[in-house]
Image 1 (cartoon, rainbow, N blue to C red):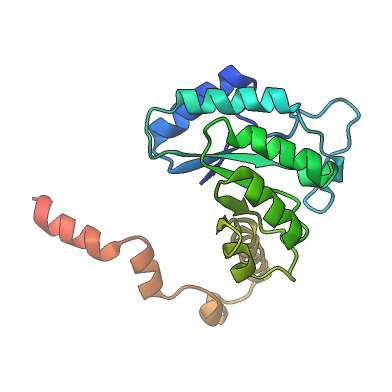
Image 2 (cartoon, rainbow, N blue to C red):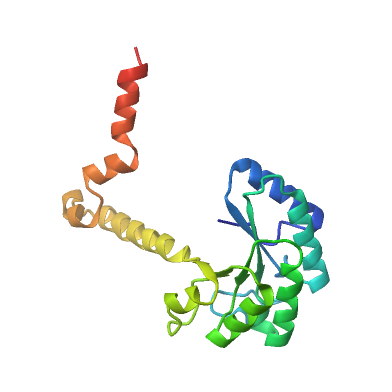
Length: 212
């Protein structure tokens, strides 16, 4: 599932984005309704303060999604319409957006800013499409609650990357300060784990079979 942002431009840019990502072999992608780039002077939204985001108009987003569907040549490519409307619009306007997006022929709706199950119930009923939920769903909402209301995927992409960054920083700091590599033994992958990651056994088989 590729985050294609806003399609990197207008509706025609969205069509190119679809073609290129489809050619690259992706299984699914999201196109969002956030206004990008930000207007001069507009605050920079962070992961904890999406209230500063701006949305493009429903009409412009519908055009982008229609263009995305038209550009698709692989019927198995999943196109997801992503909306941040829940952060800055009321539920009625959000539902109106979602209905309009669903009517373009996309395959799912990605909901950013979901706060409670009542919102999810209303939006799922309006869209009639599978829901993709972000990692920022309140902890009080359980996976089974999401699944019972049409959610088929929850995106949790930042946590593993953040964990890897922290581990790299700590490891480099240890080595830079003169720490012994052997002291990291219990905190790093074993030789067997590394061999599995790089498919060492398969490459060994290929070497024996094809290299002369």
